Amino acid sequence: MLERYGHGGDLWTAEEAFGRPKEQFLDFSSNMNPLGPPSVVKHILKDGWRDMVKYPDPAVRELRNKLSLKYDIEVESILVGNGAAELIDLTARVLKPTVTGLARPSFSEYEEAVHKSGGGIYNIPLSPIHYFELQKQDIEAAYSAADLFFLGHPNNPTGKRVPRQVLDMLIQSNRRLVLDEAFMDFVPNEQEHSLLKLASTSEQLVVIRSMTKFYSIPGIRLGFMVAHPDRIRQIQHLQVQWSVNYLAQRIGTAVLDDVDFEQSSWQWLEEEKPWLTRQLEQLGLEVVPSDVNFLLFSFPEGMDIDVKMAQKHLGHQGILIRDASLFEGLNKRYCRIAIRLREDNERLIAGLRHMMAEFMQNRGQADDE
Image (cartoon, rainbow, N blue to C red; front, side, top):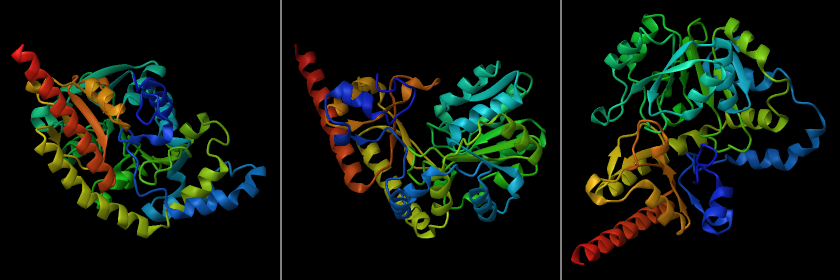
């Protein structure tokens, strides 16, 4: 199984499974910005090694100040971490929910963090009828059971934002809410949808952000969270000292200044997402409309192709896709792919077309026999 460790982007396992070097794979299983990393990262890696003999700033002051200016939030409301994964884990440990409401499907690390903190899960099923968009009645049904809601905004693997009316309802009800906005950077008008600003003064809301997806630096591990200063102090108390290394701090501070990179990324996605969506639909695949840089789609029931068959077939062609059936709430027909550059996307479509034609031909021969 390619997702042996619970995630996409595992080129080491792909190398073992398909017998080709890691460098030869075209990876659609990991949702990184194909335009990144920004050019400034190269310069930092080239010149920054001289300062690695020093300890990093334990308070991550420069990056927190830069985030404060960018999002107009008080520095005391910001905590930087070793990727969003660390902050998800720390948040669950501090909040210690008894029962957490989780949308299904959603990122598996929410559940893992809750279980580690001793809590239970209340499932909130998302329906394909609504394109997996969270509904008000689904949240209301969970009110009596859950003392915390942990939601992806936008959600992974569906790519859907939480509707504003649902967010408003949760906030007005004074429920404890954690929002994972790891992919919000890909929304051009993110300030209209993000709750970062509100989280900085709210005692009930925590917002977690990743910097690795948009800036394509997953090997660096970098994320931040915004919450009431009192909550930030509680969570920081549990954080390992020097959690954010020197290079991560320098890179994070520098990329926030790259406005041209932001604009280019939004322009790329505005063009490529509808193109790739149309291409998949023309193959007869059922695509979930996405707000971000990845797409969830399913093979029709009558096609007799499941995601594990597709993953194996494409893997031997050097193309990696994400088995979305591993997300609770999705069946074996579901696949998740990142949106990449046009040349890469064309190769994916060609691979899918070849695979589907081959399976249909084999099925036709079997029917004749």
